[in-house]
Amino acid sequence: MAKLKDKKNSSTTNQRAETIQDIYGQGEVMRVPTRALNWVAVIIIALVLGVVGGYLGGWLQTIWQPTWLLSNAPVVNEPTDGVNIIDLGKEQNKLRESFDQLTLNNLSAQTVAIYRSRPRNSEQPLQGVLTDKDLAGQGIIITSDGWIISHDGVIKDVEADYLVITTDRQGLAVEQIIADDFTGLVFIKVAGQNLRPAVLKPASTVSAQQGLMIVRQTLQPHEPALHFTRLSQWDYKPLREADDYFHSTEKLDSWLRLSSVVEATFNGSPIATAEGDIVGLLRAEAGESLGIPGFYLQLAVSNFLSNRQEPVYNRFGISYLDLAEVVGLPPQLLREQGGGALIYAPGSQKAVIANSPAAKSNLQKGDIILAVDDQMLNASVSLMRVLQEYPLGSTVKMKVLKTGQTEPEEIIVILSTK
View 1 (tube, rainbow, N blue to C red):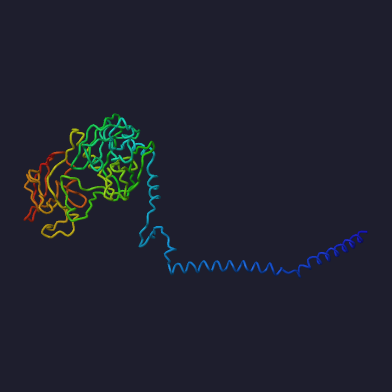
View 2: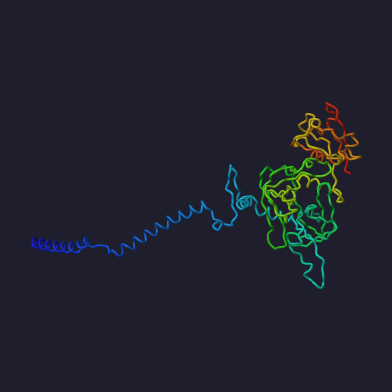
């Protein structure tokens, strides 16, 4: 019975195989309809022609450059000759990361906005409301009882009326304004108490290309506006003409130079490090962003607060050329000196001020000051800076190469404060 079962199963299997062969054997004679084949060919040919047409059109545009195909968008030059184009947005974000929120809050509390006051009119109540158009600039708090410093680019008229706005939106009336002709700083007394004074530091504590922050107060009830930049140069002096090389011991004429242009609305703002130290006061004008150096801020504030009447400085009374920075002077003026302060003046101007300490020491046009005490004057040591480092009214020794002499001599100078 078992064998019969196997045979029956074998017969059944053969029948199924034949049936399957009959069904799938028909597939060998099946053909794709001619109509469907033609449509597929049309689609393939169209795609090929489209690709070829696109390449051909781009090639013709490159050769002909028809004006109707050119974009009106500004062209951005690619980096050439190893010069990198800086993404300003990324640069600002990178610098922003180095300043913590506590530093930002402290700097904001030490910064004020200065507005030109508007006359009030009872019939038109909104006439006295301040707007952004009334912004004169910014200032820095230097005492808790209401003294602020800014500069003459912000306070252009000391007789005008101003209103000072603090970070907590207090409006403080201005009681007194004192201008400083030596640095261009302006001292402003406001009716305020318990203000937070700033910490001033010399810019020499900052390395080249170090990140800096500039803070600006506004009328809006939110965080102050910020600008992040880097220190580009110390003791910078714009040299557009030959006369720009002349220095005076009676007026500050060298600045900090920043790596980016800052909006004019930041004028008078503090320039600060990531540690919150203020190393300069911004002068944003004439397309350049400069700063009054922290050394002169410290000097002016210290001298002013000693009497609160006027800032005083060591006066010497000469106009001079720094031989370390001037190129092309004739040999009779250089006299084989690579550094020093050549007493000189442009045109018919006086090189030595009458009755000044320099005049009383018999210094004349053409004399070269080589050293003050033990400090030789060179590219990194300027006469202006050295004189202001001494206590007011100091007596100093100067090494001077007089006109017509070949060997320097030593003279004694008593600095004055008038």
